[in-house]
Image (tube, rainbow, N blue to C red):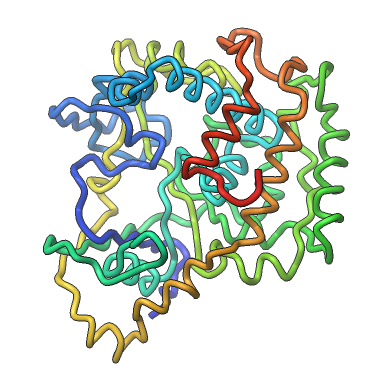
Length: 362
């Protein structure tokens, strides 16, 4: 049941969640009910036509449901700060792809080239210790996007790409497969240290210079680890929403790598509802588990193959992230960012990851 075109991607969900359909990092926001239809020049990626307006930022909604607002604020700042470091080191598209695989919220939506993988995630739900038949009586849903071919094929295409030039689709599986293979975990981590040295990571790191071309060819991944990883099993890609950048949005997220080429004067950010993209088709259905097993071989046990419990690539990516966080106050963040000095960031980061974020390697 594989798609013959890499530009056709799918996403399966056990139910249709309240709109808009967005990547994980944006789901903690609140949105106005108003729907904005726009196909003009202020769109970042020139692909979306239906946008929703954020009525509250990430932190406000998160803090509102937290029993300890001060702790929530510190966690929020630490997470932004960690992500900023990793983006500065590896570049926006690769960093976001790694965040997704490491269990950290990312700005891209998980999609797959395999309709069978999407079908599994539409019919089975996470039960705490594995995937089980969904209990909800709501219809399952599969989204299908028929997109243009991605401009990105290998890691070599990412050398000078940033937030503003990242295309709609990043083929995570192709990127990781294009990293030079090695035999051992030690070689993998040594390659990250060599990369950090090459970009002068530390007090004299120059972001504007590194943005001209990152030496990503220095990175290595163990061959055996990738073959058994979730990104391979799930034929994973990352799809980014279109957005209309605003002055308010840019003021809050100065951790971006460059000055935006476009921005509107709207006081609030506008994010694309990805389910309403002109290239998207939605299928709603009620699963028949007998047919799923007989025709597609999909059962609860399939989850162990599609979503292996221990993913070595997750472990390695976590090690990469930690290596770039060794010197938090080494001048690697643009000065205009509101740096959370005084926070015990590594302690906060480890606690966040121990509470359902990155679990196995930090």
